[in-house]
Length: 76
Ligand SMILES: [Zn+2]
Image 1 (cartoon, helix red, strand yellow):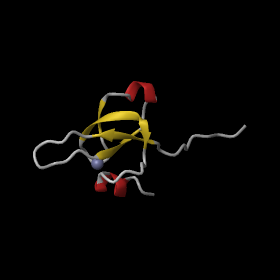
Image 2 (cartoon, protein in one colour):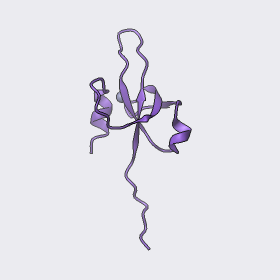
Image 3 (cartoon, rainbow, N blue to C red):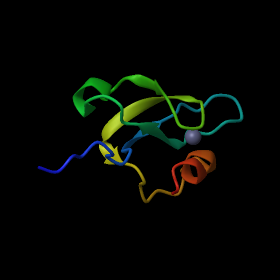
Image 4 (cartoon, protein in one colour):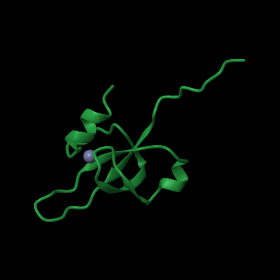
């Protein structure tokens, strides 16, 4: 029997809303619950913003408008 306690952290993509000079960006949200619970929910992103989770998209995603802070923080 193999113990699998150290599973790598998974991330889902979340879309922030554009407000003021800030454009809408894709952020990463740590997947700490089941995906179905997170779908459509506003969650705290890796960079500390609030964004709506889209489980249709997987982090990292190949989009141009990706949050640079989340991209750096999730790189390992
Ligand atoms: Zn971010």
